[in-house]
Image (cartoon, rainbow, N blue to C red; front, top):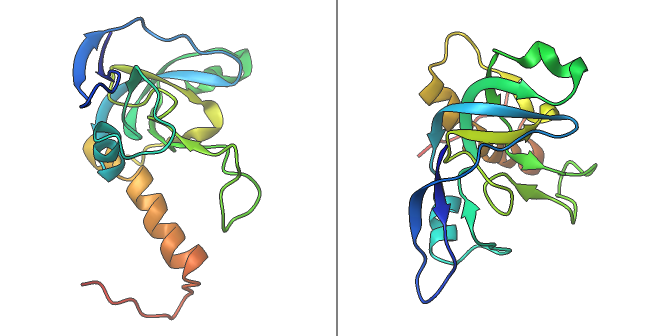
Length: 166
């Protein structure tokens, strides 16, 4: 399969489209064929060497939408063929206000969505609404989760409150 791979840092970072093996899911995981992926500031920071915990080589991309093509566990076979949005957060933890020490995001250090296929924990899959295009669905996860958390978790926004968008 093809993947946009970020190679080692030697004065500058370089991402190249490479042929890599198709990944195989393990327990509680699915392989999602990516139909659309979105870029965000985090991907840029990784290519500039500005993101903590960089590892090389690595496939970037946190946001994506695709079709589940393979699962490891028999009890997750119902996901096969479903169009899904990928929640890129991994190991958030139990505190709604702050991530755990084990927290990371798909795309660094775990290989991400800027590839033809990605491995994702089944509990990070959400059905794509029929009214959304794959491009709309792909652009939603990281930016959408960040905005939601900023407004409702950190900001305490509740029904009846007003928000000024500039």
